[in-house]
Length: 226
Figure 1 (cartoon, helix red, strand yellow):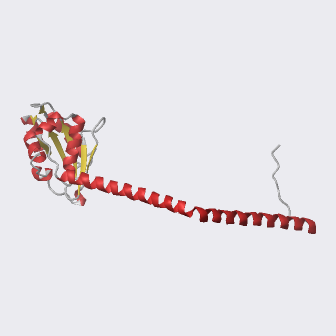
Figure 2 (tube, rainbow, N blue to C red):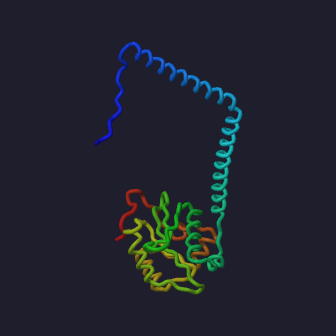
Figure 3 (spheres, helix red, strand yellow):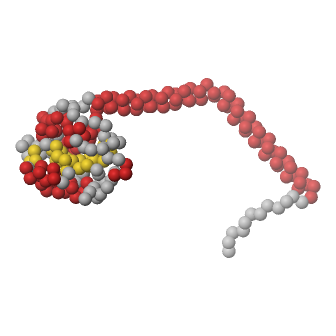
């Protein structure tokens, strides 16, 4: 059997009405006393509460100021960022990708690193207000290493369909084979070899200026590569 529900009934008779009124009055008096006690406690404790509020406000303001200072410091550092070829050569693959991302940010390209497992031939993705989206494949090699045509094929195949990019670029601290450079020039896959990397990273030439990247209107953004 299910449990019986508790049901309230109206008071019957003058005695029950009076008892209910007394109970209600007692509850009201108790509530008033509790409220008065709370007000009195707050009144006595307001200096302590004020100190807590001021302290919390100071901590919040300090955290905001620290965040703003950190962002300004990073922006100033990136604005004057220069990386030498020797520094690139000493990096590992991940550091190389992060360095390319920072250089793009320096040039006004808000960029993010996406390299890793399943990156579909793009290690850094960046969007520019006027130049569209760029997909960068980073190839960090030993000194004297060469990048072949197969890398160009992979980047061409994924830049548009997978990343909706307007521009595809392969960047290395080494060099490219002649076939890779020729194929990239024919099929609009830009390449940055050791010499171009030096001009970009050390001399401070913006990447879009170095490669002559054309502007993209909003109507032509993210078209699938032919």
